[in-house]
Length: 326
Image (spheres, one colour):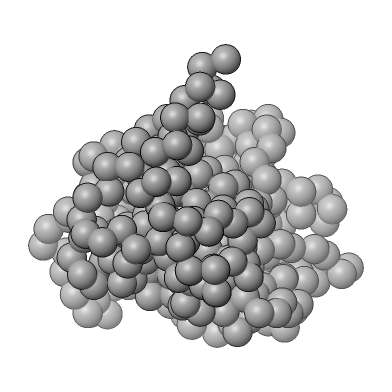
């Protein structure tokens, strides 16, 4: 039986990087508890990712198959995940705090009659008790939480856990599942996935974001910077820019958008409202460019440039290209 279990999210036919983050952390916790690590994936396509999950420390991959699990449906996925947890009886269950995880974790926890600790940035063990650290009050402070029920459930913020290869067997165990259709509250009619190929904000290592200071929908300067940084970089936006129609909501960083934790966050023309800071404040390095020296973003930034972004960013891109060309 698995002492620790993770949920491996699959999107657009690919397993998300968050699954490997959870697997690496789950392996560390399982080793301390002296037990195995299991991973749950939904749908028949999940079997193909067993070797990848095994590379990051998963002993057993539970592939739950049913026609209702080929497309994400919160009720059916929660039923399936709860079924595996009840059967395998793990002590700890970890889920990513992604858009899907925010929906799936509490719904599954409710079916199990336990709580879930949301949006955690680190985990430790106190004996067999999971101690989770999570930000509160838009990142102004941190609290340590302990789950009292069993299993202990928590969701982890994407991109905060270290990915470590610890090869294990990744043995596949298929689990049949029959959905209770009477519980479904909606049906997925159409799935509109981003096919642009750009990295998801929550998984990006570098994010270049633009706000109201961009003055319009032309983000070419920021797109250029992201392209110079490479395939692990992408472009984001503040709520003001999204509300103005300059960028799509999928690009929005903040409390009402996506919570991100890249290695580098470059904020261009973003004043830094508390809602925006809540979404990117845990970035490892923050660089801010703003012409207002009193902009709140500078209180959070590791490096700040007071100036016109339309003069600063072209020079920044020029120097960046020269640096990377060496």
